[in-house]
Amino acid sequence: MRSILTIYRKELSDYFSSKKFLILLGLVYITGLTSIYVAIQNIRVAAQSSMDSLVFLKLFTTSGDVLPSFLYFLSFFIPIIGIVFGFDSINSEKNSKNLSRLLSQPIYRDSIINGKFLAGITTMTIIVSSIILIIAGIGLRVIGVPPSAEEILRIIIFIVICICYGTFWMSMSMLFSVILDKTATSILTSVAIWIFFFFFVQIIASAIANAVAPLENATIATQISNYNIDLGIKRLSPSFLFMESITILLIPSGSHLFLRAVTTSDISNMILSPLSLGQSLIQVWPQIIAIIALAIICFAISYIVFIKQEIRST
Image 1 (cartoon, rainbow, N blue to C red):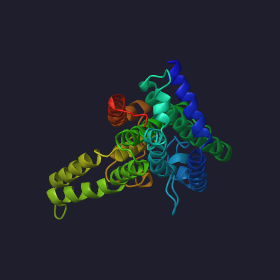
Image 2: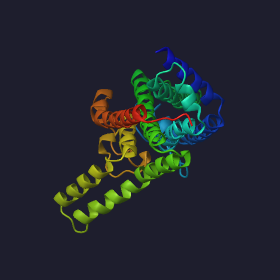
Image 3: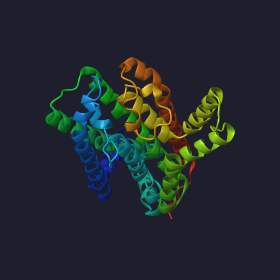
Image 4: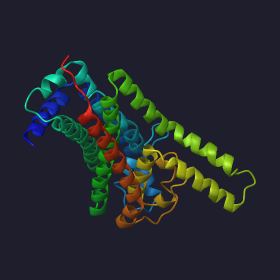
């Protein structure tokens, strides 16, 4: 346990003093503050046109005419943060020969990967939690509407989901860092998978659904079949699972009608009867469990491969 804490403190120190941490922090803060500016400009209109009592959550879901909501920005940046913290965690140590020197000390091999993993989660938690809390504080100051107890709970669960989602991408990129020797190859592979899940899965799902159950002059049964095929394929993507879960959580009014919406603004005013927190959690727990399971699987494979790898001193 002591060796894990040693690696953990060392990695935290490296993260906080690295340029990539400062760059990521700056990008996330700039986009987050930009989205909150857009939300504040439109939240009064959105609140007046809706009878939804959960007005404070609109800080995170209201989009402008040009810029999307904070949820979209976050769904874009969280995978990048996770990939950046994991793609060179192991192979960079191998290439610099620091790993062999480190293993020559009285440090267990599993302490290295566990310490790096925990340090990455901690750093990512600080970045994500801080920007969400800053946005909540600015919104509270500007709009003057305090959050209710249910809204606070929804925001806390929202932060937890974001951390789990980022953990999946970090564990996946760490897996490639363990398997692949070159850092450039590991980051390119991780980014390629992210692009596929984020952009192309939805296109492929729609194409397959339209090919199997065409919508032209379709009956209601065919339309339902088209929707089920489309949704089933999209749910193979962790990005879609994340967007679906946070949309249901933060837009309880009509969130159970999450059909073909591309942005949260498309469904924010569908229906005026919001789901309770318990009903929202019932709907999102399968997505959350799936994301956590994917993160555990990726890290478990990384752990096993790293433990069994041969690491030479020369």
